Image 1 (spheres, rainbow, N blue to C red):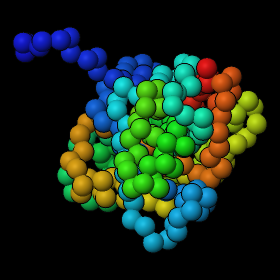
Image 2: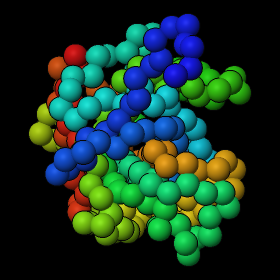
Image 3: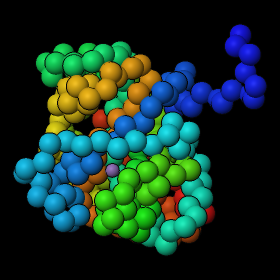
Image 4: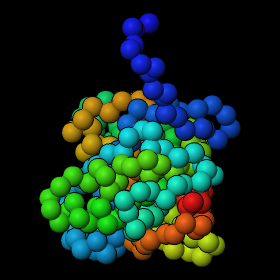
Length: 228
Ligand code: MN
């Protein structure tokens, strides 16, 4: 045992459907991975390589738990996404080999303080405080790829208070899961426990206290939270 001078932090984890728990090391997120969302954010989806930002692992919010409306923002946006869980690490992973590194998938929400993110963009400052705040990453139960395979198409949808807000198909991702793993693992060595939020489709919008968010990814599962 190391001679820690304060209590070591708990290991963040995501419950697995059917039992067990997936320990989380890092949370990566892909930006602008659906063309219609890139357009609504004012970008040209055709000319940009994938880019990544991060949230701390303890930003994960368990499925069904309430999400506290975050401080210093009046524009909390939802971004419905599929989450990829890395079971086997590696650097410079080949695209053709990438899916072997995936342990499973989940439905997740990349909650965003859009006002802070927009201010940061304008001033060329980092996105961290717009993206990586406390409880900014609601996530559903993880399902193993050994059970569900590797979904490359299927409905991705978010309802707010029972009404559809975002709806698209996984096949519309600009960078596929193997491509994003290949690209990201060329930037950093991926490790078991890493999660990748794979980007949101169009129609991101603000939510208010009291709103109920229910997202689904076909063939993967669901995620649910209420803003309080
Ligand atoms: Mn996102």
